[in-house]
Length: 100
Image (cartoon, rainbow, N blue to C red):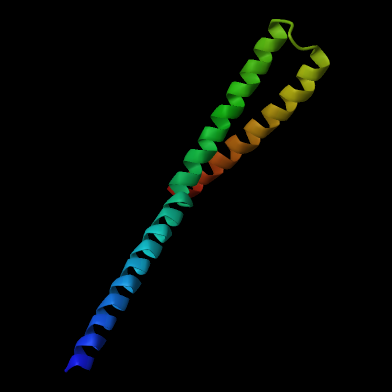
């Protein structure tokens, strides 16, 4: 009888620990799935587009305020705008494929 009680206690304790670990793994799985969901990826792409747009506007202001020379401006601006448009095309392609 004593051994049965000890076995039951051990099983209950181990089961509780295993259940807790399973719950933690399920939570991590859901967070990972949410992070890589199409909506989340699309949102992060939009944020990256907005950031690049702000950076190119800032660079343009620097040119107008004569804080940067034209050669450096053209090189940096071209890179920023290329990045922006690549992201915009990817964003449009994803939205189109998700809706149709």
